[in-house]
Length: 79
Image (cartoon, rainbow, N blue to C red; front, side, top):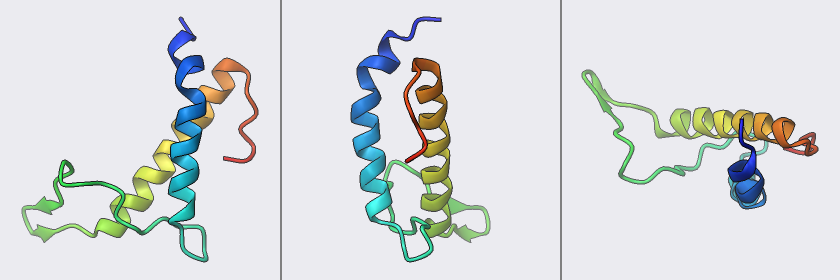
């Protein structure tokens, strides 16, 4: 596939992910609510834990960023 957009946006995405890491607690888990009102926190039984969502999406963002790094041949060991 075409790597152009990944190559073009990769450095900016790393900077955003670096910000996510600054919100992590002493265990390296991001529990700060990084997601605005666009992400629904309600389910049928009440409110979801925002910390769990932030930690999950931060992990997933890192996973995707790591895959993008592999695609364009960049080092991703520090992610």
